[in-house]
Length: 469
Image 1: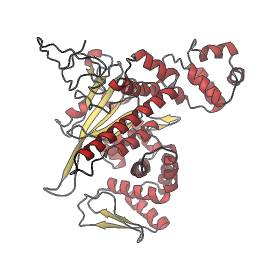
Image 2: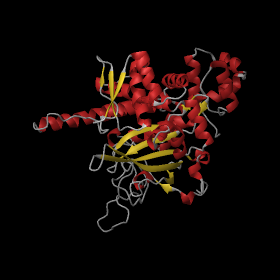
Image 3: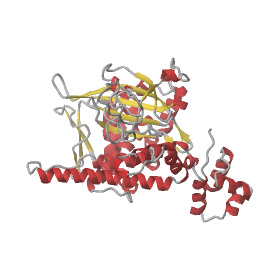
Image 4: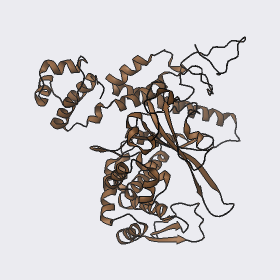
């Protein structure tokens, strides 16, 4: 563990508990002078001290995680490097802010996001006023971004729902379609009808609340049936718990709140079909082999990857993963993170990332050691998944799924076999997105970096576009 200098965070904890320095020092068995040195960043916050804080106050050591710091640094770098900020802020200053005043940093990030939404809404309004043929122009993606931020802030783990789902799964023995259907019928009077004529385009419902009838396509496999039945069970049996999770969250409109409710119901469904304890044990035993986990639990590649990104229960954490789903055009339809990994919201993602190469090799699992500009390195796994709605000629959708973790966890994954984890030359340099990536001489750069002025020279043509100093 590297040395952690987090004196301001410790001061904040003491202020929240209304403790003097002497009272805190006595509670955790330290001398007053030693505690004073920690709070003034003259000594690091060591593991023994963290354990004493946990024993005395029940403090989650994740509060002092450097992964949270790295997430915040990435978000601050994106927000503070944009031209409208008007100040040139160094990486060292950003890191200092994230390390010692994380609450201030998070407030700045929140303001940046509000500004970005306001700019999007202004652009949409201008488009509407300038073209009366498009009265429906609006920023449709904003609610989805709010829901992504909701899960991102919670490290993609919702404790109350996860534990509730695990308890229900244990009561069932196993969350098979039949077991979930029985619970829906016995506890909620819901009858499940499988429509033979439905091709599968409608994945979960129509649910008729008045008639208590849930309709599913007969073509769904067992894993998808379980997931869709479990989602409906979440709405009926744990609706209040879902509402408690989103109460107090400043969603901007009802659409975002509804999307959050759907996201939480889906979260419950995944936790019911893949109960935490059993799934984590299997993942560790199988070295996170996605195919083997899918075979054991009867679910698909994407479902396994999504669940792997949620294993962050305090005291029983799995590998912290970043999960993403993209289409061929680079549109991100799912993005969840239990890691410090961060991609820019502006200017797209990095074309050197192996999640895009997966489309060239459909159905194959690709691995990549990818290094970010701050030298943090990740092991990435990528593979395509396809979903069809019927027989020949029916619509089909194909995505690339990416699952990544920090290099220090890579040895726990079967996908690290044969990779040169310690060899810097084996790593692919990628960035958070062209507009905020400062890598010089990148041949795949699509936009100049807002952090570095582009060199424009009429007499010179270079291999890498938008070269900087």
